[in-house]
Amino acid sequence: MKSTKRIKKINGKEYWYEDIPYYDKEKKQIRHHSKYLGKNIDGEPVRMRDAMNSSGVFLPSTSFSSFNYGELLPVLSIIEELHIDRFLGDIFNEDQRNMVLSLCVNRVVRPMALHLVKTWYDASFLSVLFPGLSLSSQNVSNLLSSIGQSDVPSVFMGKLLKSVGTKSTLLYDITSLSSYSRLMSLLEYGYSRDNPDLPQLNLSMIVDKSLGIPVMYDVYPGSIVDVSTLKNTVSKVESFGVNDFTLILDRGFFSEDNMEELVGDTDLSFVIPGSLSLKKVKELMTSAKKDIDHPKYLCKFNKDPLFVKPVLLTLENNASVDGYCYYDPKREQSDRNSFYSRLYDTKEHIENRKILKWMKPSTTFTQRAGKLQKYYSWKIKDSYFITTIRKNAVMQRVNRMGKFILFYRGDNDWKECLITYRQKDLIEKGFKRFKKDLKGLPLNTQKESTTKGFIFICFISLIIQMRLLNQMKDSDLIEKYTVEKLFLELEKIKKIRLANDEIIVSELTKKQKDILEKLNLCA
Image 1 (cartoon, helix red, strand yellow):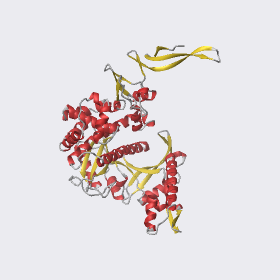
Image 2: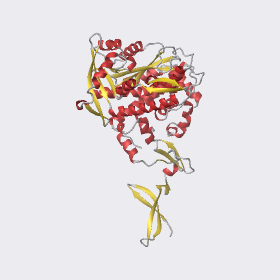
Image 3: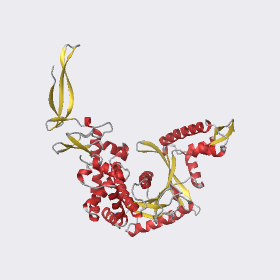
Image 4: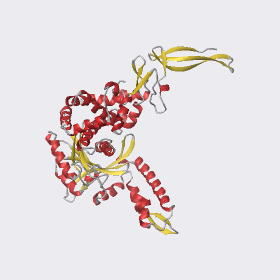
C-alpha cells in the first residue's frame, strides 16, 4: 500500500500531510494514518521545528537561513515609540547610530561581553535591518571612547526629557562602580557597596514616574558621599524644570539624621525601607508583628496574599514618618526553608572536617561557618568541632522573615509604595549589570572616556528594559513572565530566508501570539 501526499488548509494556511494506509487486524480493514510534513512554502513542505537544534536555534541548511527575531519585536517597538533612534540619528551618522542601537539591543535581550556582540549580531535579524556594521572590539572601543569624550549623553538626555515631558520623577539611589583601573580621574577610594579595596566612581539615576523609564544619570568621583551626591543630583533635576518628584532611596540612606532632614523638607516626597539597625524601627517591627496577620490587614498582590499594616515612626525632633509594615507568608516560608537548609549543611561542614594541629580553632570556625557563624556556639572534642545551634539568634532571624517596613512621604497607598519600591529592584539589577560588565569589559577600560561611553549604552538599554517592564505590568503579562522569561519565549520566533531570498516568519505558538497581542505587536 502506497502513501500519498496532500495539502490541508487550516485557518487559512496550507500544510503538507502524508496519508499512510495500513491494515487494522482487529477491525480487519484498511485504515489511514496522517503524518504532518510541514508548512506549504512554494509548493514544498518546510517543517520549522525540525530545522532547530536542541537549544531552539535554527540550523543552517542549503534551502534557507534563519535569524533570531522575536525578541527584537518589543525592543525595536520601544525604540521607535520613545524616538530613541531619531535622537541618536540627530547626533550620529547612520552607521554610528546603528552601532549604538545594536549595542543597546544586545544589552537588553542577551547581555554579553562586548567582543562577542558581533557573533550575536550576525545571527540576529539586526544584521538584515542594519547591514554591514563593523562591530569589532577596536571599532566598538573607538565608538565608546568618542561618546565618553563628547557631550553626547547630555544632548541625548536633553532631547529625551523634552520629548517625554517629564514633570514628576523618581530619584533612585546611587551605586558605586569599582574598577581595577588606576588611571581614571573619576576613580577614587570611598565607601564602596561591592568592593572596598578598589577605587570606584558613583552613578545616580533619575526615572520618569509616569513612563517608568530613566531619563537622566550622573557620574561622580567615588569619594563623594551619598548625601552630597543626592543634593547635587536634586539640583540638576530642578534645573530641568522638574520640581515635583519622589525620592526612592536605599536602606543605606536610612538614619535618624537623614530622616529628620528629609521630613524637614515639606515639599520632598520619598519612599525608603526602614533599617532594623535603628532601635526605634526594631521596636516598631516588634510591635507590628503581634497582630499583622489579623484578617483586617489582609490584601492581595500579584494573586498572592499579603498583610499590610500602617505604622508611624516618631523621630527625636518629634517629627513623624508614615509607613507600611508588610508581611508576605509565601516569602516567609521560602526564606525559612532556605535558611534552615543552609544552617544544617553548614553545621555538617563545620563538624565533619578534622582540625589539624597547625590550625587556629577560632579562625578555622569562622572560615567554615562564614556568614552564619553567629548562629552557632562551639567547642572542640578529639580534634573536631561540636556545634550547637543558638536558638535565640535563629529565632530573631526567622521571626523577621517575610516582613519589612517601607516609610514614605507623599500621597502613596500601600500598593503604590510597594510597586514603586520594587521598581527600584530593576534599577539595582541594572546597576549590577553595569558592575559586572565594567569589570569584565574586554576593551580598554583604562580610559575614562571608554567607561563613560559604555555607561551611556547601558543607560539607553535600561530605558528600553524599564519601559518594557511597565508595558508588561499594564498588560498583566508581569503576572506570568519576568523580562528574561518573556525574551526566552519570544526568541523562538525566527525570520527565515528561503532559497529565493523570500523572508518568512516561523509559526507562532499560542503563548507567543498572546504576548504579541498584549504588547500590541505584529510579527
